Amino acid sequence: MSSASYYQRHIFFCLNQRENENACLQHNAQEAFDHCKKRVKAEKLAGKGGVRVNKAGCLDRCAGGPVAVVYPDAVWYQFVDNSDIDEIVERHLKHGEVVERLVLDDSVGR
Image 1 (tube, rainbow, N blue to C red):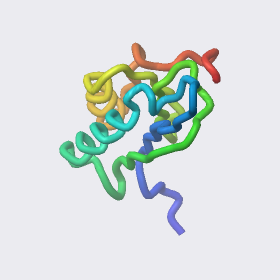
Image 2: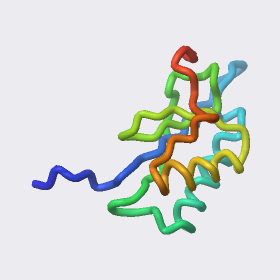
Image 3: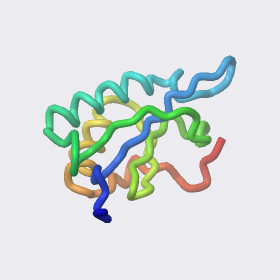
Image 4: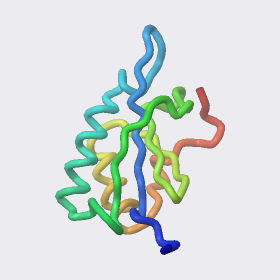
């Protein structure tokens, strides 16, 4: 059995929704997820040895929402719009460079 991972990286987007509470889905997380999937495919990063874009339920970092996390790097991002997603795709998912300006502070939780 191979020790290499099927995907080089996974990016998980919180798409949780809550009634009368701050939740990522209320802050355009679905649009960001959709945009990321399109960009990853357009850059030919999708598939074995590449990047997988995944939906997630609550990631319990609501105060920083919307949020996404890249594994195995364990880098948490907060984002505002599609240009932020473009930068994450280009710099982190494609080239392995953390986008420091978008990193979610470790103190941010629910």
